[in-house]
Length: 212
Image 1 (cartoon, rainbow, N blue to C red):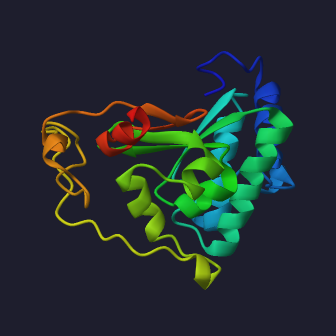
Image 2 (image 1 turned 180 degrees about the horizontal axis):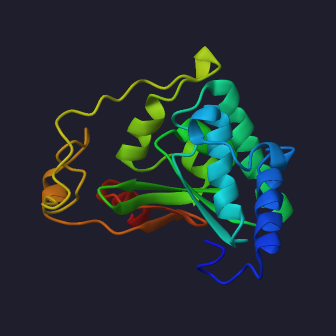
């Protein structure tokens, strides 16, 4: 990548940049890892190498697609702490893609919930987690384990299969599985409406509440 983007002026410069990226990713001393093969690394170490591969290009934005989903809980915490540290020390913006809203609550400043390729709810993390507006968001949160049993939500089990993404249903794309869908949901595709100071949701029921 360094050669492709013209960032390394020499072999020595390239190696120095790689060493710096490995150490920023928590692999110290980096010289112990330069010539290792993937099977010689643990799962957490392999994930750190992937992160270092992104850091070596000195990005402003880092796209993290399920970065901890296949890791043990203890290693997961280490990687999340590393990403949080990199965000602070390097000033990197991180787009964190995951199905785990529990992890998102720990890590993110803002949350965007997507269904079939469209954002159905977006807002500050606490707003979305503590006051979800879209039925899909509510269903996702209902299955997140709560440390305090008194704070557990009633589980919302969605019925049916997710529609074919190349044949999106008419109206609201969530209506075939929505537990509160109405007849109009089959006809009209909702847009994001502001619920409260930047907290937006795309649901006709929410839209009706805030229009009234």
